[in-house]
Image (cartoon, rainbow over all chains, first blue to last red; front, side):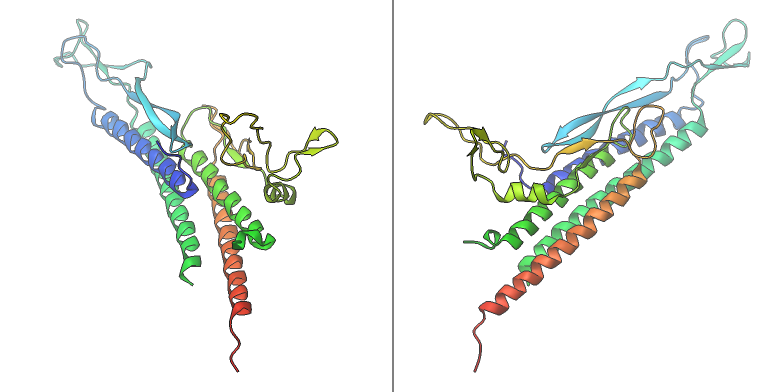
Length: 139
Length: 148
């Protein structure tokens, strides 16, 4: 692969990798919120477990970008609710509910949005600087 | 001889290089704003010394028996099969330093601080490009044929 000389190009590649990562994070948050009430299919079984994205710095175009390495499971305890009529209830009549807290998810979503906007800002600035350089040729 | 051989243009070019490199470093920080344990970096402020080292690349390899780093240390090619580095290493060095806040997961990137740095780099870049353009205009004015 040829060496990338343009700083502007690698700046944009870095910001794009971050956009992709934040997009992936949003998907995970959406999954969590969507499954906030998903109980087990079998009686006494475990319900949906909250998913947590793991970010890691990665090389893109000769610079350090970011990628969503994997999605881990949140190991915190499930909430339980007494609901004997539920098909997922165990022998004592308790149903395990997912360890998803909508407030936490909403905060995470806000943070992902903020990071996404910041990266768009970076792209916009890099683009403006590049076109300012091209202006030298124009005059 | 190109415009870069004129010291003023050479310095402006070096300044533009520094600013776009800084913008890249800031982009890396912003991209890793959610990476646990990430320490933001920044380029050391542009100094006359650094610009001088960039200017005098390849000059005076020895002084008093010691190698004087000029535009970065370059390797000696003592055999025809040795490869010579195509460009000297940059005189700027990225240094790690935490922003104003560090979160619980050890991430020390503050988006606000980074945005501030980025707009600073952008304004300085615009100023340098404007200066370059004006100097070019002056050169052109001097080279123009005078009528009458």
